[in-house]
Amino acid sequence: MTLSMGVSGGISEETAGTGEVIFPEGFVWGTATASYQIEGAANEDGRGPSIWDTFSRTPGKVFAGHTGDVACDHYHRYRDDVAMMADLGVQAYRFSMAWPRIQPDGSGPVNPRGLDFYDRLVDELHGHGITPLVTLYHWDLPQALEDRGGWTSRETAERFAEYAAVAYGRLGDRIATWTTLNEPWCSSFLGYGAGVHAPGRTDPGAAFAAVHHLLLGHGLAVAELRAAGAAQVGITLNLAPISGDDPEAVAHIDGLQNRIFLDPVLRGEYPADVVERARRFTDWSFVRDGDLDIIGAPIDVLGVNYYSPTAVRLRAGQPANPVHPGSEGIAFVQGDEEKTAMGWSVKPSGLTELLTRVSRDYPGTPLIITENGAAFDDVLADGRVADERRIAFLDGHFRAAHAAIAAGADLRGYFVWSLMDNFEWAEGYAKRFGLVHVDYASQRRTPKDSALWYREVIRRNGLQA
Ligand SMILES: OC[C@@H]1[C@@H](O)[C@H](O)[C@@H](O)c2nc(CNc3ccccc3)cn21
Image (cartoon, rainbow, N blue to C red; front, side, top):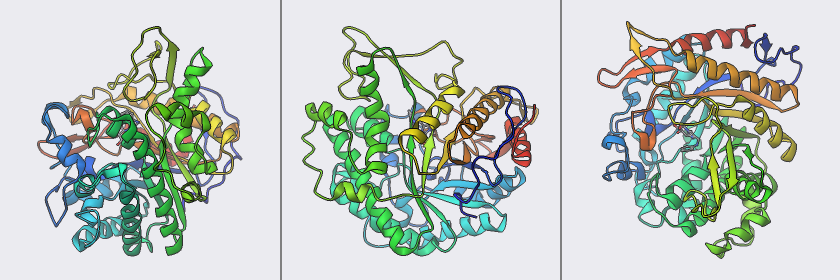
């Protein structure tokens, strides 16, 4: 089953907010994870160091000095984790491959034991009737490539395409949907601009070079995957609806958050306003003739990660937000909506707004929600986690996705972030996004109430009244 073979439309009448909603036949329900966040086995079977191994060992960068050395020990426990997914009725599973497992130095020699792990994982998934959706890059860049400039260097884009071909060569016969990057916005603006993610650089000009080379890597990898016969290729972007009273402020942030990625990938061009505003930080000389044709090669599916909307307003004297270069005078404001444990506003209608906007402005590409979920302060008591807030969060967002389908969005599937609690980047293990609770001391998994609730949603292909 490929993920874009579903049928959009043809849905029952919806009662907003509380009534029964049924999703289109063939709609795919899944869960998502990422290699560095769950695998552990950081120094096992030939895996090389990644920038997150380096960053998490840098004092002060990650909560309490947490690292992904062990994480959820998924590298050793994958069979039980897949069986757990099957028990939860999960139809598809989005996971990422660790480039440093497959090419420890990011180029050259391939580590067969790294490929062997994903071989075993994919066979286990198929053995349980679970469709794999792979992310080739979810932030764990081989450190050796960062030592040569990382995503600020064109060479990394070229090495990424080679890695994609290696991965496809071993697993292309069993994985139908290949997404290249997870959230190039995070890799570039958090990793090279604000320095709050690996590799921890704080150089806006480097962030724009990283934007380009990440996108170029995407395009070069798409070409390799197409040449090798991939059934479906795509990319995952974290997107958000941007609201505010000042059109210029909204356009500025919408440009840096959304359009700087959507336009190249889906239109083959950078948004002119973003290019001009960024000239304070870069001369864009890293863009070569033909790059945008490579980046804009057609894709089969766009992965959308949505968590929370963004609201901005003008504020005199407001210093620039380091995550958003050139945002002097723009304040990021929070509404009075409920907040998650990450401090993110809970606004399901933002998902409807986002999906309908992308469908309107970038028509023709099927969408998948590749991540949506929430961290709450879960408590395990008597073998149970009564995470009612997560159930309410997901219920609201599922209804919002359904409303977008009703409004014409070609949405094919939904992957809840995350299958299980895991390493939450700079927050370490302090934040829990999982449908399944993980006791890191014992590695015991406990499906939360939300996991049991999700099992019923999947069985019904929708929500009860
Ligand atoms: O933070 C939850 C997840 C994270 O665990 C995933 O690895 C990543 O793909 C992901 N992206 C977002 C949305 N973007 C974002 C915004 C600020 C900081 C980090 C990520 C949330 N998440």
